[in-house]
Image (spheres, rainbow, N blue to C red):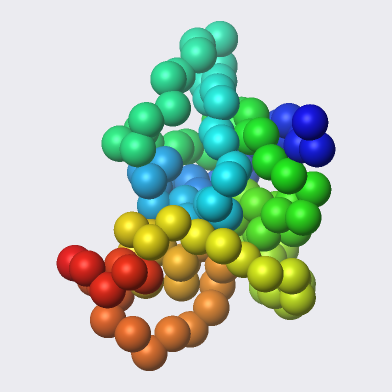
Length: 119
């Protein structure tokens, strides 16, 4: 299989910290397999809140690694990077607000809309 399992530890300034898993706007085809918090394993569900110190174990293909790095990195750290030039495929139900927050980009679309145009 052409994929990696990558562990991320969320920091205080991580774009994902303090948000629900469903708000991460991860690239299509990535799977968050496990979250550990201290000595506990937290089942990854869309409603699961993520906190600084959480360890996320994400299965992904090599070509989306840079995007996942941005989502899991600290805000100040991520501002030093430009968006990768490869294609980013997202699920249609991804909200514009989540896309903006996860990747630090500005879009003029309504924050409540999803990429497929639904609310």
